[in-house]
Every structure is written in structure tokens, then in C-alpha cells.
Length: 156
Image (cartoon, rainbow, N blue to C red; front, side, top):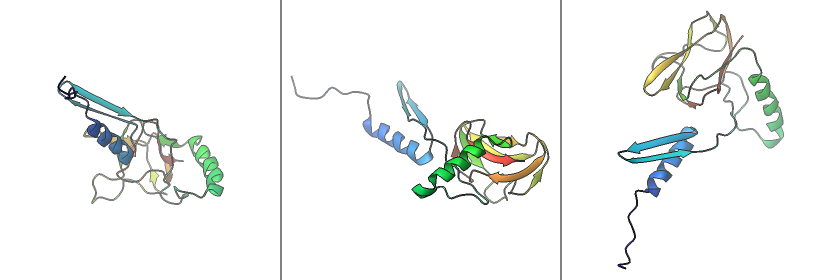
């Protein structure tokens, strides 16, 4: 024996970098492929937290207020006007960083109006109003990653 280690295709540093990227972006899984090498890193998604833009509770509440926030989050999930993300991607509130958001809290919208964009695989997908109504809550911020089924906004 020469005492040398057998070289493997496993790159622990790359796995750590991918895991760090998952944490930074809030995504639940990521896959990397180069030639014959394929690495998939996944984590169990945490329960959805709400960043209520335009008049909601803070995202980090003291323990005493957590039960109230949980009840409010449950009520939002059951709201008939809740629009959820149809895909995993990054949400954008306007057509570009210099443009105003498509909608603000209190805006009346027509059916088919663009409310948000979700970028997935370099494609910007418009999220359109399923019916006419008034935007009462926006639950996401510009440029944040979203998961499939994550609450986006409430249209009453």
C-alpha cells in the first residue's frame, strides 16, 4: 500500500456551498450537474411564514404573541380570496426595479390584471387576478423566493 487515499468524485465543499445556498434563498432543494457528476441537496421545508406588507404583523414575534400570529396565519390560509404561488421561483412586484409595483394594498383590479411576476428558469410568469376585486393584503416582498402553494396576496 502506498498510503494514498482513493480519489472520489464526492466534493464535500460543493455540497456545503449548495446547502448554504438553500439556506440563503429559502428554497427546499437544489440540484447541480456537471458532466457525469450530479448532486442534489434537499431539506425539509419549514412552515410558511408571512411577511405581511402593507399593514400586517412582524415576521419575528415574541413567544407570547406567537399563538396569535399562528391563528392569524391559519385564518389567512383559509381565506377565500387567497392567491398562492403556482410554482417555485422568485416573486417580483413590478416589471423591473425602476417601475412601480403592479398593485398596492387597496387597489381595485379587473379579472386578468397582472398582480405579480414569478421568475422561474429565466422566464417571467405573470400572476393574474382570477376575478375582479380589491387587493387587501400583499404577503410577499419584491425579490424573495417562493415555494409552490406559498401565499402571495389576498384579493377580496
